[in-house]
Image (cartoon, rainbow, N blue to C red):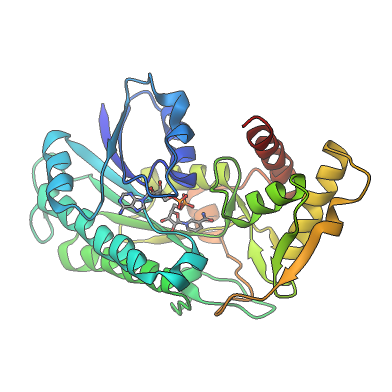
Length: 337
Ligand code: NAD
């Protein structure tokens, strides 16, 4: 049995990933450490309640004693680290929590793993030679793109929000543990995820919820900001590949090759709702433009050729197929409350 510590597994991507992993592997046992902030939702993991290979621990990744205790109790061969404050809008109003969790929390996990797995720089304790720390990060660390170009693993970091700056800092700490201590680390930087179990505050759940509630659908600025949309299950398969086969010390970008602007997304969802839940007026009439947020990056897009060529990863969904599944999932959630 392989014991893996997953952090932030009650959130959007972490909960999808735990289900994905436990379905795929019978020899993996997971401890999910999550503080259950406003973004954590235990109901995301309902289907795992009786799974003997799954344990939930409520706690903070910044808690030095707790993380140390977990490493002592469970013989972790890996950490897959999702826990973060993840909403850019919140990082503008309240950056403190972002620095605490994303920077200090990542450091605490990494340092505890090092102390349990290594007895000196570049020297692993017996049996820990293949133990791996996988850090989940974002394409937002690269800053913003103009109308053309793609983020590759070599793009210089230029974070523009407290959120992306905190993630960039954590990426650098992870990198330093590879170069300084020889720790077995990998980092994945992904584009915007969408799919089931995302928090209500994020763009796509907001559009769907406001639309069916008959409320205004708020779109920042002129709606022309572009993101590279990645279906969450495709992200999970990419993380799994990198965790199992990625080269130590490397970073891998994961993106859906699905650049869409916010206005297109709102119209696409409204069009689907017109078919699925027809009413007298068109849902798109509810779209309204609101004042843009400060420091709103114009465009993100990922060159995923490294993970595709090196590890054979391919996204299965494009935005038009993934969004149908997503809209149906949220209709079920919002209409059955
Ligand atoms: P999320 O906000 O949905 O979930 C975060 C989870 O972390 C929650 O369950 C929360 O309770 C937990 N958490 C927060 N602070 C904690 C702490 N101090 N200790 C323990 N647990 C804590 O986030 P998500 O969208 O699932 O994102 C997961 C990871 O992926 C994050 O690291 C994020 O930066 C990265 N990422 C997300 C996206 C995206 O589109 N959602 C894109 C790129 C990268």
